[in-house]
Image (cartoon, rainbow, N blue to C red):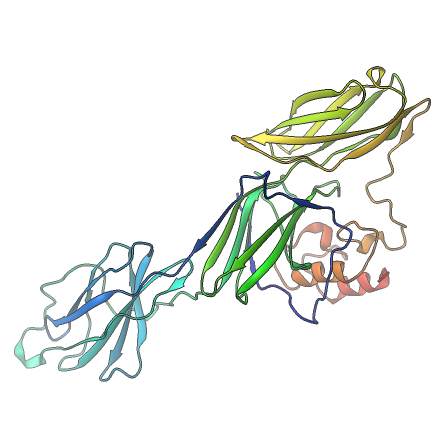
Length: 402
Protein backbone atom coordinates (compact mmCIF):
# COMPACT_ATOMS: atom_id res chain seq x y z
CA UNK A 1 0.00 0.00 0.00
CA UNK A 2 1.44 3.32 -1.01
CA UNK A 3 0.89 6.43 1.01
CA UNK A 4 1.20 9.59 -1.04
CA UNK A 5 1.86 13.10 0.20
CA UNK A 6 1.09 16.08 -1.98
CA UNK A 7 2.50 19.49 -1.14
CA UNK A 8 4.73 22.37 -2.10
CA UNK A 9 8.36 22.78 -1.05
CA UNK A 10 9.05 25.18 1.82
CA UNK A 11 11.16 27.91 0.23
CA UNK A 12 12.52 31.23 1.37
CA UNK A 13 12.70 32.68 4.82
CA UNK A 14 9.75 30.73 6.22
CA UNK A 15 11.71 27.51 6.78
CA UNK A 16 15.43 28.10 6.09
CA UNK A 17 16.30 24.59 7.29
CA UNK A 18 19.68 23.01 6.60
CA UNK A 19 20.50 19.36 7.32
CA UNK A 20 24.18 19.43 8.23
CA UNK A 21 24.41 16.25 10.27
CA UNK A 22 23.07 13.78 7.71
CA UNK A 23 25.46 11.33 6.12
CA UNK A 24 25.27 11.85 2.36
CA UNK A 25 25.52 8.88 0.02
CA UNK A 26 25.87 9.47 -3.71
CA UNK A 27 23.80 6.68 -5.17
CA UNK A 28 24.17 7.63 -8.83
CA UNK A 29 26.36 4.61 -9.69
CA UNK A 30 24.80 2.10 -7.31
CA UNK A 31 21.02 2.33 -7.49
CA UNK A 32 18.78 1.33 -10.36
CA UNK A 33 16.88 4.57 -9.99
CA UNK A 34 14.91 5.79 -13.00
CA UNK A 35 14.38 9.50 -13.65
CA UNK A 36 11.59 10.03 -16.16
CA UNK A 37 10.41 13.40 -17.46
CA UNK A 38 6.86 13.46 -18.81
CA UNK A 39 6.20 16.40 -21.14
CA UNK A 40 2.75 17.75 -22.01
CA UNK A 41 1.45 16.50 -25.37
CA UNK A 42 1.15 18.47 -28.61
CA UNK A 43 -2.15 20.21 -29.34
CA UNK A 44 -4.72 18.33 -31.47
CA UNK A 45 -5.44 19.65 -34.96
CA UNK A 46 -8.11 19.68 -37.70
CA UNK A 47 -11.01 20.13 -35.28
CA UNK A 48 -14.43 20.24 -36.99
CA UNK A 49 -17.92 20.81 -35.59
CA UNK A 50 -21.12 19.61 -37.30
CA UNK A 51 -24.69 20.42 -36.27
CA UNK A 52 -26.76 17.23 -36.06
CA UNK A 53 -30.03 18.54 -34.60
CA UNK A 54 -31.46 21.33 -32.52
CA UNK A 55 -29.72 19.88 -29.45
CA UNK A 56 -26.61 18.08 -30.73
CA UNK A 57 -23.25 18.98 -32.28
CA UNK A 58 -20.63 16.39 -33.22
CA UNK A 59 -16.91 17.10 -32.99
CA UNK A 60 -13.99 15.39 -34.72
CA UNK A 61 -10.24 16.08 -34.54
CA UNK A 62 -6.84 14.63 -35.31
CA UNK A 63 -4.45 13.58 -32.52
CA UNK A 64 -0.97 14.93 -33.24
CA UNK A 65 0.85 13.26 -30.34
CA UNK A 66 0.95 9.81 -28.77
CA UNK A 67 1.71 10.57 -25.12
CA UNK A 68 -1.68 11.92 -24.07
CA UNK A 69 -3.80 10.27 -21.40
CA UNK A 70 -6.94 12.05 -22.57
CA UNK A 71 -8.49 15.06 -24.27
CA UNK A 72 -10.28 17.98 -22.65
CA UNK A 73 -13.28 19.47 -24.51
CA UNK A 74 -13.86 23.24 -24.16
CA UNK A 75 -16.99 25.13 -25.19
CA UNK A 76 -18.08 28.76 -25.65
CA UNK A 77 -21.67 29.83 -26.26
CA UNK A 78 -22.58 32.60 -28.69
CA UNK A 79 -19.01 33.84 -29.19
CA UNK A 80 -15.49 32.55 -28.76
CA UNK A 81 -14.41 34.93 -26.01
CA UNK A 82 -14.96 32.63 -23.04
CA UNK A 83 -14.26 28.90 -23.27
CA UNK A 84 -15.25 26.56 -20.44
CA UNK A 85 -14.05 22.95 -20.02
CA UNK A 86 -17.07 20.66 -20.25
CA UNK A 87 -15.76 17.10 -20.41
CA UNK A 88 -12.83 14.75 -21.03
CA UNK A 89 -12.45 11.68 -23.22
CA UNK A 90 -9.86 8.93 -23.39
CA UNK A 91 -6.45 8.92 -25.07
CA UNK A 92 -7.63 7.25 -28.30
CA UNK A 93 -10.77 9.31 -28.83
CA UNK A 94 -10.97 11.57 -31.89
CA UNK A 95 -14.72 12.31 -31.82
CA UNK A 96 -17.23 13.67 -29.33
CA UNK A 97 -21.00 14.19 -29.36
CA UNK A 98 -22.22 17.23 -27.45
CA UNK A 99 -25.91 16.86 -26.53
CA UNK A 100 -28.48 18.80 -24.52
CA UNK A 101 -27.83 22.05 -26.41
CA UNK A 102 -30.18 24.98 -27.09
CA UNK A 103 -31.78 25.29 -30.54
CA UNK A 104 -30.72 27.99 -32.99
CA UNK A 105 -27.56 28.70 -30.97
CA UNK A 106 -23.99 28.96 -32.17
CA UNK A 107 -21.40 27.03 -30.15
CA UNK A 108 -17.62 27.27 -30.40
CA UNK A 109 -15.29 24.43 -29.49
CA UNK A 110 -11.63 23.63 -29.01
CA UNK A 111 -9.80 20.56 -27.69
CA UNK A 112 -6.65 20.07 -25.63
CA UNK A 113 -4.60 16.91 -25.08
CA UNK A 114 -3.25 16.26 -21.58
CA UNK A 115 -1.18 13.85 -19.52
CA UNK A 116 0.37 13.76 -16.05
CA UNK A 117 2.71 16.63 -16.92
CA UNK A 118 0.11 19.09 -18.16
CA UNK A 119 -2.13 20.14 -21.00
CA UNK A 120 -1.30 21.07 -24.56
CA UNK A 121 -2.23 24.34 -26.14
CA UNK A 122 -5.69 24.48 -27.67
CA UNK A 123 -6.55 23.06 -31.06
CA UNK A 124 -8.00 25.24 -33.76
CA UNK A 125 -11.49 26.55 -33.01
CA UNK A 126 -14.56 25.09 -34.69
CA UNK A 127 -18.12 26.40 -34.59
CA UNK A 128 -21.58 25.10 -35.47
CA UNK A 129 -25.14 26.34 -35.03
CA UNK A 130 -27.86 24.00 -33.80
CA UNK A 131 -31.01 23.64 -35.90
CA UNK A 132 -34.18 25.56 -35.09
CA UNK A 133 -36.62 23.85 -32.77
CA UNK A 134 -39.42 24.14 -35.36
CA UNK A 135 -37.52 21.89 -37.75
CA UNK A 136 -38.74 18.93 -35.76
CA UNK A 137 -35.29 17.52 -35.74
CA UNK A 138 -34.91 17.58 -31.98
CA UNK A 139 -33.58 14.07 -31.63
CA UNK A 140 -29.96 13.34 -31.15
CA UNK A 141 -29.31 11.08 -34.14
CA UNK A 142 -25.97 10.65 -35.82
CA UNK A 143 -23.99 10.32 -32.59
CA UNK A 144 -20.26 9.72 -32.80
CA UNK A 145 -19.81 8.35 -29.31
CA UNK A 146 -17.24 9.65 -26.88
CA UNK A 147 -19.60 11.20 -24.37
CA UNK A 148 -21.69 14.34 -24.26
CA UNK A 149 -24.18 15.93 -21.96
CA UNK A 150 -24.14 18.97 -19.77
CA UNK A 151 -20.76 18.50 -18.10
CA UNK A 152 -21.80 20.82 -15.27
CA UNK A 153 -19.90 18.78 -12.68
CA UNK A 154 -16.71 18.56 -14.72
CA UNK A 155 -13.61 19.90 -12.98
CA UNK A 156 -10.61 20.34 -15.31
CA UNK A 157 -7.31 18.88 -14.09
CA UNK A 158 -4.70 21.24 -12.64
CA UNK A 159 -1.25 20.87 -14.15
CA UNK A 160 1.91 22.10 -12.46
CA UNK A 161 5.65 21.58 -12.52
CA UNK A 162 6.09 18.63 -10.20
CA UNK A 163 8.40 15.89 -8.96
CA UNK A 164 7.26 12.44 -7.84
CA UNK A 165 9.44 10.16 -5.71
CA UNK A 166 8.60 6.50 -5.17
CA UNK A 167 10.31 3.35 -3.95
CA UNK A 168 10.75 0.94 -1.06
CA UNK A 169 11.72 1.85 2.52
CA UNK A 170 10.82 -0.12 5.68
CA UNK A 171 7.29 -0.95 6.88
CA UNK A 172 5.60 1.88 8.80
CA UNK A 173 8.75 4.00 8.66
CA UNK A 174 9.17 7.76 8.29
CA UNK A 175 10.55 9.11 5.02
CA UNK A 176 12.00 12.60 4.89
CA UNK A 177 12.60 14.40 1.59
CA UNK A 178 15.06 17.28 1.34
CA UNK A 179 15.21 19.81 -1.50
CA UNK A 180 18.29 22.03 -1.70
CA UNK A 181 18.98 21.36 1.99
CA UNK A 182 15.43 22.07 3.19
CA UNK A 183 12.84 19.64 4.51
CA UNK A 184 10.36 19.43 1.64
CA UNK A 185 8.08 16.61 2.78
CA UNK A 186 7.70 13.96 5.46
CA UNK A 187 5.52 10.88 5.06
CA UNK A 188 5.09 7.31 6.28
CA UNK A 189 5.53 4.16 4.23
CA UNK A 190 2.79 1.56 4.11
CA UNK A 191 2.88 -1.91 5.69
CA UNK A 192 4.52 -3.20 2.48
CA UNK A 193 7.24 -0.52 2.84
CA UNK A 194 6.34 1.30 -0.40
CA UNK A 195 5.99 5.06 -0.48
CA UNK A 196 5.24 7.91 -2.85
CA UNK A 197 5.83 11.63 -2.41
CA UNK A 198 4.41 14.13 -4.90
CA UNK A 199 5.77 17.68 -4.79
CA UNK A 200 3.74 20.08 -6.89
CA UNK A 201 3.67 23.77 -7.71
CA UNK A 202 7.46 23.92 -7.99
CA UNK A 203 9.50 26.59 -9.76
CA UNK A 204 11.37 25.13 -12.71
CA UNK A 205 15.12 24.71 -12.19
CA UNK A 206 17.82 22.37 -10.93
CA UNK A 207 17.35 20.76 -7.52
CA UNK A 208 19.55 18.69 -5.25
CA UNK A 209 17.18 16.23 -3.64
CA UNK A 210 18.02 14.05 -0.66
CA UNK A 211 15.83 11.39 0.90
CA UNK A 212 16.27 9.22 3.99
CA UNK A 213 14.18 6.90 6.12
CA UNK A 214 13.92 6.54 9.90
CA UNK A 215 12.91 3.10 11.17
CA UNK A 216 10.54 2.38 14.05
CA UNK A 217 13.48 2.26 16.50
CA UNK A 218 14.63 5.75 15.49
CA UNK A 219 17.69 4.61 13.51
CA UNK A 220 18.23 6.45 10.26
CA UNK A 221 19.39 5.23 6.86
CA UNK A 222 22.00 6.85 4.67
CA UNK A 223 20.69 9.73 2.58
CA UNK A 224 20.12 8.98 -1.09
CA UNK A 225 20.86 12.06 -3.21
CA UNK A 226 19.66 12.99 -6.67
CA UNK A 227 20.26 16.05 -8.82
CA UNK A 228 17.50 16.76 -11.29
CA UNK A 229 16.42 19.64 -13.49
CA UNK A 230 12.65 20.19 -13.39
CA UNK A 231 11.13 21.45 -16.62
CA UNK A 232 8.33 23.98 -16.48
CA UNK A 233 4.96 22.27 -16.86
CA UNK A 234 6.47 18.78 -16.83
CA UNK A 235 6.33 15.98 -14.27
CA UNK A 236 9.67 14.46 -13.26
CA UNK A 237 9.30 10.99 -11.76
CA UNK A 238 12.17 9.58 -9.69
CA UNK A 239 11.29 5.93 -9.17
CA UNK A 240 12.98 2.76 -8.01
CA UNK A 241 14.40 4.27 -4.79
CA UNK A 242 15.51 1.36 -2.59
CA UNK A 243 16.96 2.09 0.82
CA UNK A 244 19.71 -0.01 2.39
CA UNK A 245 18.80 -1.41 5.81
CA UNK A 246 19.59 0.24 9.10
CA UNK A 247 22.16 -1.51 11.30
CA UNK A 248 22.93 -1.43 15.01
CA UNK A 249 23.70 -3.92 17.82
CA UNK A 250 22.87 -4.68 21.41
CA UNK A 251 26.39 -3.77 22.56
CA UNK A 252 29.09 -1.30 21.55
CA UNK A 253 31.77 -3.41 23.23
CA UNK A 254 31.46 -7.18 23.47
CA UNK A 255 33.47 -9.61 25.57
CA UNK A 256 35.39 -11.89 23.24
CA UNK A 257 33.57 -15.20 23.06
CA UNK A 258 30.13 -13.70 23.73
CA UNK A 259 27.52 -13.30 21.01
CA UNK A 260 27.05 -9.87 19.43
CA UNK A 261 23.58 -9.47 17.93
CA UNK A 262 23.45 -7.18 14.91
CA UNK A 263 19.97 -6.04 13.85
CA UNK A 264 18.09 -3.40 11.93
CA UNK A 265 15.18 -2.80 9.57
CA UNK A 266 14.75 -3.21 5.83
CA UNK A 267 12.10 -4.15 3.31
CA UNK A 268 9.79 -6.99 4.38
CA UNK A 269 10.93 -10.52 3.52
CA UNK A 270 14.14 -9.17 1.95
CA UNK A 271 17.49 -10.94 1.77
CA UNK A 272 19.89 -8.96 3.98
CA UNK A 273 23.62 -9.48 3.46
CA UNK A 274 25.65 -8.73 6.61
CA UNK A 275 29.42 -8.22 6.60
CA UNK A 276 31.65 -7.95 9.68
CA UNK A 277 35.05 -6.49 8.84
CA UNK A 278 37.97 -8.19 10.60
CA UNK A 279 41.17 -10.09 9.74
CA UNK A 280 38.87 -13.00 8.96
CA UNK A 281 35.84 -11.31 7.41
CA UNK A 282 32.47 -12.73 8.42
CA UNK A 283 29.54 -12.58 6.01
CA UNK A 284 26.08 -14.06 6.08
CA UNK A 285 22.65 -13.65 4.56
CA UNK A 286 19.48 -13.46 6.64
CA UNK A 287 15.83 -12.82 5.79
CA UNK A 288 13.91 -9.92 7.30
CA UNK A 289 10.50 -10.48 8.84
CA UNK A 290 7.19 -9.19 7.50
CA UNK A 291 7.76 -6.15 9.71
CA UNK A 292 11.18 -5.61 8.14
CA UNK A 293 13.22 -6.64 11.21
CA UNK A 294 16.42 -8.60 10.58
CA UNK A 295 18.89 -10.02 13.14
CA UNK A 296 22.23 -11.76 12.92
CA UNK A 297 24.14 -13.26 15.90
CA UNK A 298 27.92 -12.90 15.55
CA UNK A 299 30.16 -15.44 17.28
CA UNK A 300 32.98 -13.19 18.50
CA UNK A 301 35.34 -16.14 19.00
CA UNK A 302 36.14 -15.54 15.33
CA UNK A 303 37.11 -11.90 15.90
CA UNK A 304 40.39 -10.46 17.15
CA UNK A 305 40.54 -7.95 19.99
CA UNK A 306 40.06 -4.33 19.00
CA UNK A 307 37.77 -2.24 16.85
CA UNK A 308 35.54 -3.62 14.11
CA UNK A 309 32.85 -2.37 11.76
CA UNK A 310 29.81 -4.02 10.22
CA UNK A 311 27.54 -3.04 7.37
CA UNK A 312 24.68 -4.54 5.42
CA UNK A 313 22.77 -4.30 2.19
CA UNK A 314 19.66 -6.02 0.95
CA UNK A 315 18.08 -7.52 -2.16
CA UNK A 316 14.44 -7.89 -3.07
CA UNK A 317 12.65 -8.53 -6.38
CA UNK A 318 15.93 -8.47 -8.28
CA UNK A 319 16.99 -5.07 -6.91
CA UNK A 320 20.05 -4.53 -4.70
CA UNK A 321 20.67 -1.58 -2.39
CA UNK A 322 23.99 0.15 -1.74
CA UNK A 323 25.73 -0.37 1.60
CA UNK A 324 24.18 0.73 4.85
CA UNK A 325 25.93 3.02 7.27
CA UNK A 326 28.82 1.45 9.19
CA UNK A 327 28.23 0.23 12.73
CA UNK A 328 31.38 0.34 14.89
CA UNK A 329 32.00 -1.92 17.87
CA UNK A 330 34.90 -3.23 19.97
CA UNK A 331 35.87 -6.74 20.99
CA UNK A 332 37.41 -6.64 24.46
CA UNK A 333 37.40 -8.24 27.88
CA UNK A 334 34.06 -6.80 29.01
CA UNK A 335 30.67 -6.11 27.49
CA UNK A 336 29.24 -2.59 27.30
CA UNK A 337 25.59 -2.23 26.30
CA UNK A 338 24.54 0.06 23.47
CA UNK A 339 23.11 3.40 24.54
CA UNK A 340 19.36 3.79 24.04
CA UNK A 341 18.23 4.87 20.60
CA UNK A 342 17.97 8.43 21.83
CA UNK A 343 21.24 9.24 23.57
CA UNK A 344 20.20 12.86 23.77
CA UNK A 345 19.77 14.68 27.09
CA UNK A 346 16.29 13.91 28.41
CA UNK A 347 15.36 17.56 28.88
CA UNK A 348 14.67 18.01 25.17
CA UNK A 349 14.57 14.57 23.52
CA UNK A 350 10.78 14.64 23.26
CA UNK A 351 10.93 17.40 20.67
CA UNK A 352 13.84 15.83 18.74
CA UNK A 353 11.77 14.59 15.79
CA UNK A 354 14.68 13.69 13.50
CA UNK A 355 16.87 12.18 16.26
CA UNK A 356 19.88 14.49 15.84
CA UNK A 357 20.05 15.47 19.54
CA UNK A 358 18.80 18.96 18.79
CA UNK A 359 15.43 20.65 18.79
CA UNK A 360 15.61 23.32 16.14
CA UNK A 361 14.18 24.49 12.81
CA UNK A 362 14.45 21.02 11.30
CA UNK A 363 12.02 19.69 13.89
CA UNK A 364 9.87 22.82 13.52
CA UNK A 365 9.72 22.25 9.76
CA UNK A 366 8.71 18.62 10.18
CA UNK A 367 5.97 19.58 12.63
CA UNK A 368 4.79 22.41 10.36
CA UNK A 369 4.47 20.02 7.43
CA UNK A 370 1.90 17.95 9.35
CA UNK A 371 -0.01 20.99 10.66
CA UNK A 372 -3.77 20.43 10.35
CA UNK A 373 -3.45 17.13 8.45
CA UNK A 374 -5.41 14.01 9.28
CA UNK A 375 -3.60 11.13 10.99
CA UNK A 376 -0.06 12.53 11.29
CA UNK A 377 2.61 10.04 12.46
CA UNK A 378 2.20 9.18 16.12
CA UNK A 379 5.83 10.11 16.84
CA UNK A 380 5.06 13.73 15.89
CA UNK A 381 1.95 14.10 18.09
CA UNK A 382 3.79 15.61 21.04
CA UNK A 383 0.64 16.06 23.10
CA UNK A 384 -0.70 12.62 22.15
CA UNK A 385 -3.78 13.95 20.36
CA UNK A 386 -4.91 13.10 16.82
CA UNK A 387 -3.72 16.30 15.09
CA UNK A 388 -0.78 18.67 15.14
CA UNK A 389 -1.80 22.00 16.67
CA UNK A 390 -0.43 24.89 18.74
CA UNK A 391 -0.04 22.68 21.80
CA UNK A 392 2.51 20.56 19.92
CA UNK A 393 4.44 23.68 18.91
CA UNK A 394 4.38 24.88 22.51
CA UNK A 395 5.91 21.59 23.62
CA UNK A 396 8.52 21.87 20.88
CA UNK A 397 9.36 25.41 22.00
CA UNK A 398 9.80 24.23 25.59
CA UNK A 399 12.53 21.78 24.53
CA UNK A 400 14.09 24.17 21.98
CA UNK A 401 17.90 24.09 21.70
CA UNK A 402 18.46 25.99 18.46
